[in-house]
Length: 217
Picture 1 (cartoon, one colour):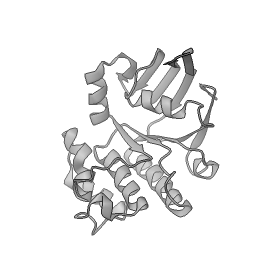
Picture 2: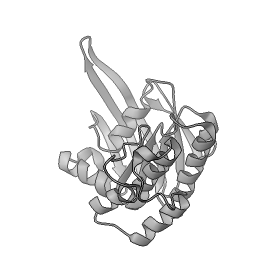
Picture 3: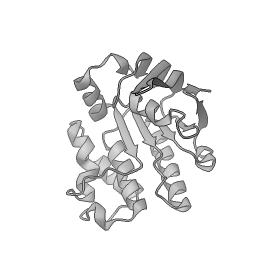
Picture 4: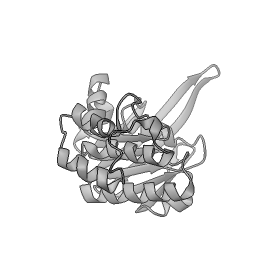
C-alpha cells in the first residue's frame, strides 16, 4: 500500500543545506501496522510529512497504492490528504467549534464519503457513545485522541499516519489508543504507520522499522 524508495530531504539553514533524510526506504502493506522508531532528529516526522504530502521530497519516490505522491502538485497533495491519507497528530488538531460528532464526520464529508453507519460503528468502537454533542474542550486528552483517530479513519483511507500520537497521554490511554488504531486498521485494510519513541507501543504493532540519521533499517 505504501512504498517509499530512496527519499531525500534537506532544509536550508544559514550554514547551508542540512540533510534530514538520506535515501530513506520503507514499505507498509494493506492492513499492516508498522511502528517507526528513532531518536529525536532522526527524520521520523519529516518522513511522515512527506508521505502525507505536507511537504515535498528533494529526491526519491513515494507511492500510496497507485498514486505517486512525489509527482503531485499542491492541489494533488491536498486531494491526497482528503481522500487517501488520514493523519493523527500529537496535538489532536480537532476543530474546537465542532462537536465530537461533527469532528468525526469532517474528513469523510470532505472526501464525499460520509457513511452514517460507519461513523456510528467508529463512535461505538472508540467508546464515544453519548459524547457526540460535546465539544473538544469538554473532553479528556484520551477522549480527544480517540476522536482524532476516528476522524482519520472515517473516510476509510488507504493509509493512516500517526506522528507521536500518544505523547500527551498516560500509559494506559496510550496502550488503548495504539491497540484500537491497530485493530481498526487491520479490520478496514488500511495501512497504519506510527512514529513513536516507545518500544512498548511499538511491540503492539505488526513490526518495527528504525530510522537513524535519515536512513530506515
